[in-house]
Length: 600
Image 1 (tube, rainbow, N blue to C red):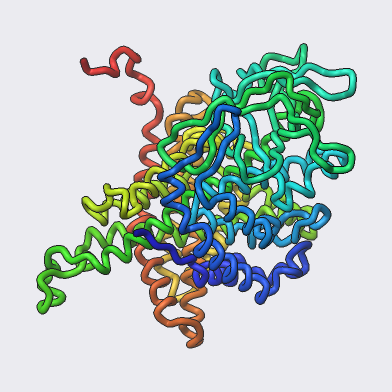
Image 2: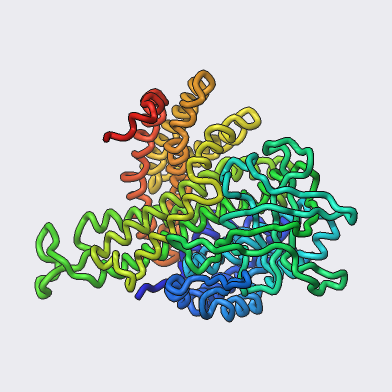
């Protein structure tokens, strides 16, 4: 049976030494994030997910969700009770606005808890996760009336929320949507159309579900410029806040999926459902992007979280399983075989997982800090810098985070050998669950194009210049420290490869846009190698300092330094190969006619 222990100590290390929470006490929302309060969130939140959510993960996957003839959907056994405890404990309100009943904690603190929740039960975590995205959109774009009507119950968790984008004929290209919104005499709109792949579209966890739906009004351009956003509740909400009649929205079916089977992924039918415009007409995509950007960061966190729990189980299996002998001679001569830990290739897979999970945790939490600072930093300059950094790195966190999460899960399964393919051990579920994160909220190829095709040139390249400046400044400081000088020098070389690849794009992308398209994914991973490298430089610097002072857990700090060395020697060199892929250009990628792809 699988197991999971929330990595509280590592999270605390990152919050203190990479994020530096104590430096932001004067920023709005951070005053409440005292060390004692944050420790309580990590400890109690970790205990909650380990005791309440994790035991439902395998059983929920095996049972799945069920749609009934009346269109209702029930979640697996135990989910409703667990969700009620989640709401009663207030875990969903951590970073929600105080004005609507939230605790107003920094986003970086709630992100730490969300990692634990996803690791323990990714399918369960999706229900409140979608609601948080809908809350974010209504906070920014909703009218005062809409906010007062929906947000208090959504923040408390009594009501759920969704985002309705995709339709049968369109995925990422939202300009192709056909859902219509006809204006009504009372100021509402009649919403008609079909949406697919709607996570948490229908379920039995909450008494109401507030759908945010993209649709086109009459006469709107037949493109993405004609899209508007509407709030469409499952049940009407009366003026006194009570629930009224059922709206004309229903679940037509639920998808039978490869993974996250306990998350209800629905086909939603809108048959003249009553909805209300959110924000301005034909400005819906901008409003929905508020949800989508929050969701993309959350999906990157999913990659990390599934990688973490798969890694933990692979480590334990490698400690317990005996197979063969060490290449240098029997490690335990009194036993018939040594443990898997003696084999370099098993170590390779586990070290790669450790280096990426710990590095991605730091990047996700540091990215969450930028979200906080973008909204609440004291000066416009600080807010702009934070916005530039997280805007640039959102596709990296999503794309690299989920690619690596899936890779870690499959390597963890590999450590188990044949047992990894068997359901009882739990590894095959983590592989299945991790796979979807590379696909939704914009496939990773789309994320890469967002980075290389849009974010690089935005504002004259201001964001990538700011990121490069930050990296080089910290490299310069690292080179002055004997403990981190070698790492800093290796990171400097990787940063040089990134700079060279960026310049190549600038020189060759305009004359042939396919050069950008063909090199976008390796470019995304090149940025990821450098960004996670920056996090490891910070962690190695902190670990060396603490060790020199004789403070902290010596074994933990030694492990940090060894893992940083592994990242420097085994991961940072990949930057050169990624640059060479980018500079290979698009000619060979685009040359072959479609009919020549099949060998038969």
